[in-house]
Length: 378
Image (tube, rainbow, N blue to C red; front, side, top):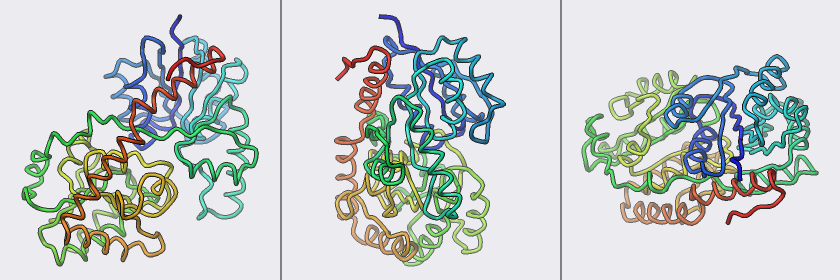
């Protein structure tokens, strides 16, 4: 059986949730059956990772949907690589290649990593995005959603929408806490016994870092042996740094920027906070739980697909975010036994539901279905 050439198309080359998902998928893909090629719509660290993995990749820059200026280049890549199947990640990735794919009659499978028609958008923009997503998902051979919540939203808003749910997965061998994170604590002069909170995400509006900084300040006043690592980069990072300075807590909150050693960061952490306004299925949250961090997240779709409140983490209502974060952090700091219980249950949740190998085998099954008409993988 010849190798099936799969083109993965991703919206950006910077590392975010979708990009982490794709890198994990490619690391577990059966290279005896499948030959991957990647197109990213911008440059970034992910391209370096792909090169290190020996995976052919292209950067076709496009910041807008339905960019006819890049279709000719997309078509050339499809023909030059004899692509059998296209797998797109995110609406903009799909909209930039759907017409060349259709012209060449190459089947497309599309993963929704979170819908673009958010409730906080103006009504006209939300309606326009719903129409766009309905049009795009109707052009594919198969749609994947990463959570049951995304499936329910798709059926509710798009109407005639069919999909399969395949949860994001993480590599359990990487997130095993064998590294106790002592090197990270030493790097930032954090005492070995101190409580460390971490936030690992792009610094953008949707990730909502500012309320977390304010909540941390209030709790840290009562528990001075408490620190926070806010890892990542993005347009909101400068404002976050300014706020930490204004609150006179910058000696307890560190902003190291983008880091390639996220497992070590999480190994040095006790609590992971994700105060997002919206999520698809947050990879960073799953990684943290796999590493044995006690999880605190907003009770929004995506996070609620991962965390069961009071069982393997704590969920905070978005409309009561800052006080809720304060309460959650205080409970964990005051009761180390409760913290460890949540952390242990979180690891079990990931083992049972969010294993990267299980995720990859299910996606490979879809590739086989599209290529041969039937699947043989289990």
